Amino acid sequence: MASSMLNGAENLAIIRGITPKGLGFFGSQIHGKHIPRMSFISTCKPRTILSPKCCLSASRPASQPRFIQHKKEAFWFYRFLSIVYDHVINPGHWTEDMRDDALEPADLSDRNMLVVDVGGGTGFTTLGIVKHVDAKNVTILDQSPHQLAKAKQKEPLKDCKIIEGDAEDLPFPTDYADRYVSAGSIEYWPDPERGIREAYRVLKLGGKACLIGPVYPTFWLSRFFSDVWMLFPKEEEYIEWFTKAGFKDVQLKRIGPKWYRGVRRHGLIMGCSVTGVKPASGDSPLQLGPKAEDVSKPVNPFVFMLRFLLGAVAATYYVLVPIYMWLKDQIVPKGQPI
Image (cartoon, rainbow, N blue to C red):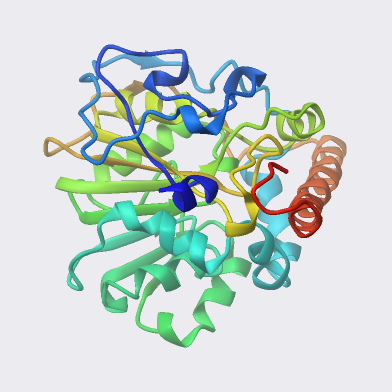
């Protein structure tokens, strides 16, 4: 248990009747306050959260004033980043042990399951999926042909279906898949609730969604770069979005590299794996308005370039964060916080 807590991999249950302040668990360092890690409420048999009601939701959470990159900038950002993605980004932010830990709640228990990996990119997460599910039953979807080209080169993924598509408008029929997985994609969704609503729609009755993403940091400089760059949801926002979409048995599991010692205030070194079960066939009860971002509309070239460059600066900062934390782990004696 102690080792699990230090690795930031607790199973967090949302307890009925306890909401906004931490949603029934503690130590998340949300709202900019540090709360000791040893005060988590953790349980082996999480209880079901309150049943969601059909509602009209805003296109983007007010707590996340993201100024820079959305889908269109991300397309070009990954045009260049795809060249070094598996060798530069993954070693610091998305390691194999983190991936396997994050996929564990998805319950990939049958090799014949139909699985969609949304925002699958270079197929790094898919490599973890095909350990448990036959590749012929897995579909990788991403908006970046450059990232998908890397996935096509990986031998274990040669039997996967690989398609270009939009996470907020999936090209799959309703009640299609047994499992929905999305890792490191929500950051670029202009409308995260729309993406989670789509996850609900494409799943079969009893199917499970597993969404893996970063958590909003509390360190002031990291907050600045996250606010102007991408979507860094708070833990309670993940839970709220899954609940509104109609999911039951929603759980949140914290993830991080073993050397991270559970330190989460700097953000992005992934953060959590959120799962939910589809309780009824058909579409999600959540009703939404028009899309927050239409990639078919022209963009002012000056604004586009400014947003792209500022995003590159923020990305550089977050490449340096894991290096900084790794060095601290080497210097600070074991057992002491870093």
